Image (tube, rainbow, N blue to C red; front, side, top):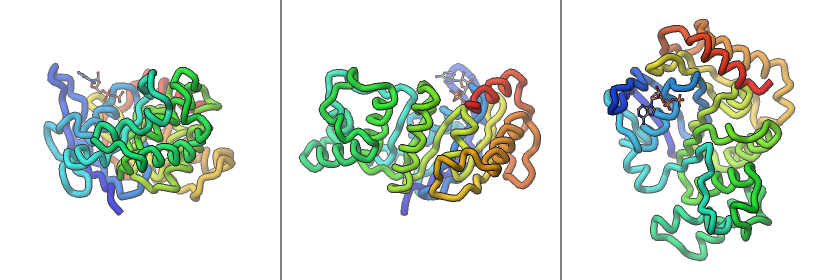
Length: 278
Ligand code: ADP
């Protein structure tokens, strides 16, 4: 199985001089689900862009299966989902899902059948003929997830994909994503501001801090799989949420791999607390 992501001593500054990341190290094994959490502006999206090959590291290196991510990007082995689904409004749902295949010059009956299959998998089997304007926010995000999976990528990068949704829809999307991930076992890097979401979905949670961003600690999520919704009411779940919150607030995390430095500013901790969704 493929989809191993390695970030080794990665630093990055934007052309205006803004230092976004400082010596970030993170290894994600094939099929693993890793969330990135931390205050706004600590470089989580920048790290995703480096893995997606839309930015290049200033120092250090990023690899996917041992090679620079360019090869994975050009072979469409990287799927992406953002907070905004960015669907083409004049295209019906299935045609939006097929778009990456068309851009790669592969529009055929098999692609259409695959789009319908993916829409079924995300619970939108009956909506293939609808236009984006006829879908709810959560449904549009399901289309965006199906579109990200159409070329059978090995890596899925998700940047706060459910951040704009209400809590009930978000919980529903978490269940859809878990179902899809359990069926495909694709490697996922998932940026979120919600501690509960990170704990519910992930194998490990990487806690970022500071500007420039570093990884403060990486917390293994030991909850059993498949993750049933009930797990969110388990004692162990609350314990893990507390560990993530404690790491965000700046206490060293015993037993986890620390790579961070300075304390998280108090206002950012407030933002993180608000993000627990409780
Ligand atoms: P996060 O995803 O954790 O909120 P980002 O990766 O978006 O953080 O941003 C990290 C830092 O880089 C922030 O200080 C942000 O202001 C800066 N930054 C992000 N994008 C750009 C850009 N295109 N040009 C200059 N600075 C940027």
